[in-house]
Image 1 (cartoon, rainbow, N blue to C red):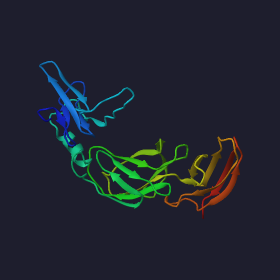
Image 2: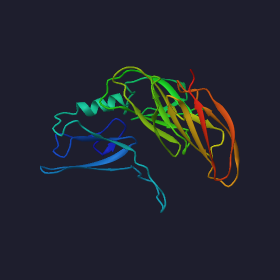
Image 3: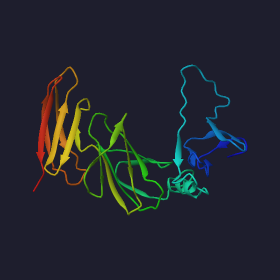
Length: 251
């Protein structure tokens, strides 16, 4: 930490060994820190440097940081924390590389932040030995639509979407990864709720209209994912009603 307590990207505070759990705090935005260390206490207080700024009631500040726990409370050095700093690109370029085929890379500090196109983000990520999985945030998705992750053309696994951002992770320790994150089923009416169940038999689609007016829309499978049946269907979903479709898998 800087003598004045200023922490830039790549700086971190770590405690080890620690009977309560060896760990570290990595700022993801510039922060200030105040360290207290005695024979019985190690404590760190963090804050945002806002000197010279005028704050008013209702103003909000966002403090983004990453908390890391070591594999053992008896960790004797900072190697595990420095490996995380290096591999996840905290104050440096990340150790992995990413080549998108659909969507755009927006940031790599601490986690990979990307923007989806046409309902999905797709990319190749290189094999990288790292002590944690790579965290992947995908912007530009739609709340209330099923979201999934597909790795190397395998089965689709559910992913969480909150306020338009999909959250998942990818393990790069075993080899290069081709990953797709997005909506298995697309709809040209974002107001509908769309649930997709993908099985070996195909896709079952449930579309529900929470609004007060009927909606005519097209539902279609997303070609970004491998192995899905190619299907598209125009339906009218009555206000407050729902429609269920079944798209069988190909031969």
